[in-house]
Picture 1 (tube, rainbow, N blue to C red):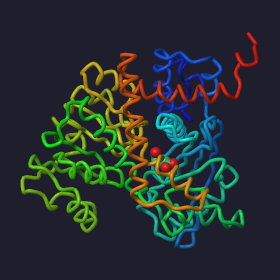
Picture 2 (picture 1 turned 90 degrees about the horizontal axis):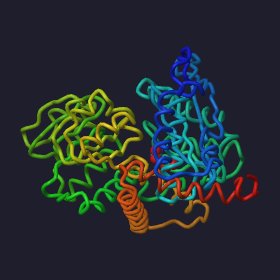
Picture 3 (picture 1 turned 180 degrees about the vertical axis):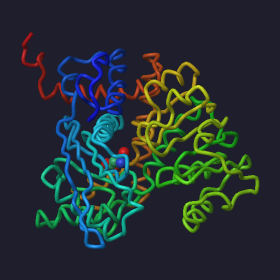
Picture 4 (picture 1 turned 90 degrees about the vertical axis):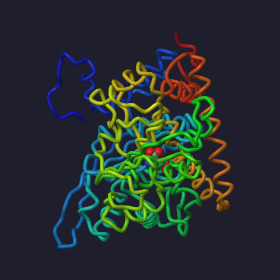
Length: 438
Ligand code: GLU
């Protein structure tokens, strides 16, 4: 929520929502211009269904107590239980979590997984915590939100700076509270606790399936195409690895410590191993020798065929959108391009493959994990890959066709596709037309 005084001249401020959430909702407003929806559906999607803000008080290793701000937001559950990750980051706010929950709602709809959208987060820099402190933080957070989640209500998962170990602690804590075994309450768990094969690389892999399915439309020839990646975490690394295997030349990679550029191409596998052994410093790693250190900002402005923002939101804004030289942007992060920057990129004919489609591979394999948990029957890796590919490719073509049909940008087309499914579900629950009330 915005904490400063409201500016009366800014009508958008009147509902006291924050900037990131309002920016997210603008995308919906734009889609409605191309694909009008009933006022009832618009009302339903206006605000989060419920939001919880908690203080997560943790005993630190030195015996002291420390309080961390925690949130869980369920945006909408018209299409099924709400679903979305839990983020640990020092910039987490209710505003951001609301926006992320909003995006999850549309993401699940665009790929057709039977979920609504949610998100959670704790305002914390995990690098400052010991492993034991991190475990206590994760378990206490679940104590605080346990009444809001459940395998048929709201299902958390990993997001930035949370991983399968954290999901394992969280699932275990939920089971302790409920005195039973409920593996379907959280996805992204370790395999031994009911996780799915293929979940770890699912977001990066899903993005690659989208790009590869659209190669012909985008006039992309892997062997001739260059790629720059912002973010070398779970999402960025697997995307880099799979694109490299497909023949794309990865010329730049960054992480939170800096970026490197090598016009001869970078093999992501050896670089990842180097990064892990060298305190995340990329420079000096195994490259072809022409590598040079550049800034994250310079990486975004490189003249490449594909730019992959796979880190935080708000990376491409009015500040740098005029200088982006990539031909295509594949959004693996959530919200890396602002609405105002979208307009500039569109004018400059830079195609943005939107987050709610490009990074939906993660939640899709989370859905597979949940299905396996609910049925108690576990799949082979090949089955996970095949099913993920099918879903991502189908959604990509649907969005592409909708874009051509409406003559809009690809993001708006993705929102239209999602709105079709959300509208059907909301209307099936009954609207003013259904009840025949004028
Ligand atoms: N955090 C991921 C996302 O933003 C995955 C969510 C999930 O698996 O539920 O899509």
